[in-house]
Amino acid sequence: MRILFSSTPAHGHLLPLLPLARAFRDRGDAVAVLTAGAFAPLLDAEGITLLPAGPTADVLFAESARRTGVDAAADPRPEAVADFFAGTRVDLTADDALAAAREFAPDLIVAEALDFVGPLVAAALDVPVATMAFGPAIPAEFTDGMTAVVGSRYADRGLAPVPARWHLDPCPDLLQPPGWQAPANRVPVRPEPHRGAGGAGTGAGAGTGAESSSGAVSDDAAGAPGDRPRVLVTFGTHFSDPATLTPILAELRTVGVDLVVTLGLTASAADYDLAASGSADVSAGSDITFAAFTPLADLLHDVDLVVTHGGAGTTLGVLSRGLPLVVVPQGADQFLQAAVVSASGTGIAVQPGPDVAETVAKAVVTLRTDPGYTEAARTVAAQIAAMPTPSDVAATLAASLA
Image (cartoon, rainbow, N blue to C red; front, side, top):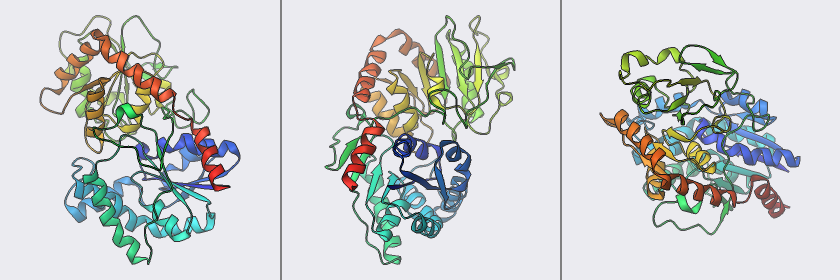
């Protein structure tokens, strides 16, 4: 069979598709991904074909902001989100995607939940489409607007939207928002923290090591575990701004924990001036390790809890390991994850504000001293473990298409 995945050109949208893409690949199916060409190294390492289509996210954000006057990443109001995903990206990507997909001739298209290019391609080629969520259900105030915006793009091509035959959902019931009801076409699929192409260990695309606060490089991306509680601080690839994180890290160094901090795609340890921002009351022996871009799975082995921006893939990956979180949302859909983490008792949500650093540090202390958060996280992990694996789901879809 020939399976085509389609994704917005952003790690947070593409990476959750990879476990299912690998499952189809391992079955011997031909697998390709429609997204921006910048993801060629990641997909080449996976042995998955890239069909380059459309510009990168920074170009899309700039064009969408030009059209609407709003940065959809920093200010995710419904109308800006609708233009970015269902307007600007479709306008700048659909023609290239249609040409590439016709040549690939897929039997099935799997589109991540905010990818509106894949479903349009499926309608044009008359092939079935599955949508794949990457987190909790997206509120109707966003989905209704996106559906309305993309409708004119179908009409311009003489097409009509085709309902998804399957809605693949990696979000366990315990993390869905209040009032959520499972759609009739829902197929649960177990989420996995992102791992390298070689397996559970560090693979292609990972950082080559971790840099300590003194500048030394560790062979282990997460550093060697010690006696102190270890906290992973990860704000993803797009939101790891040293200006945002430095005060938080400085405050965390006062509460008796060691820190593993991911750098995102562009920052370096030198960008963090902890001496200038830190409190004089740094706990004796406190250690901080900076890790270059590294698969999340490699970072979760020896940590006790996670401080994060609340990206959907990060949130599900952390909770699949039964670890509690402090979520500090910065933009995009992160406020949705913050809300469900708080409601489920698996962590504490801290809203941005002038006292965010102190509040995050207090939240870390609370997670360390109140076992209820870890118990709730382990309950969610058990529910995730009971979900069908990506291999199970690939087999189910293939049987339905046979």
